[in-house]
Length: 90
Image (cartoon, rainbow, N blue to C red):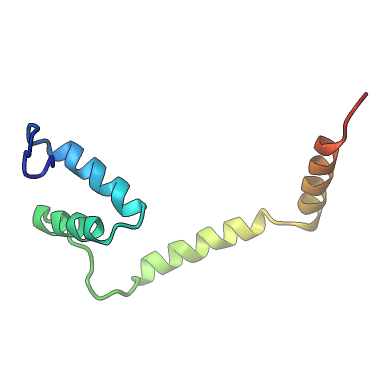
């Protein structure tokens, strides 16, 4: 509708907004059009489908940081907090 100005003024911002909402909701044609718009605007990504070494290193560092926040004590504290929140005080 916003893409072809059917009944409304052409608005590329609203077009992208609604395409993104539809794509997030699983609409395949919306995902296609988002990719097409990215290609047309010159925002091309590596088409090989592989992750670069730098990106992989960043992903591994992020996962290590996430793993470092996990501990048995933290899990026990989460369970205790949940159980306390479920108790009814008179």
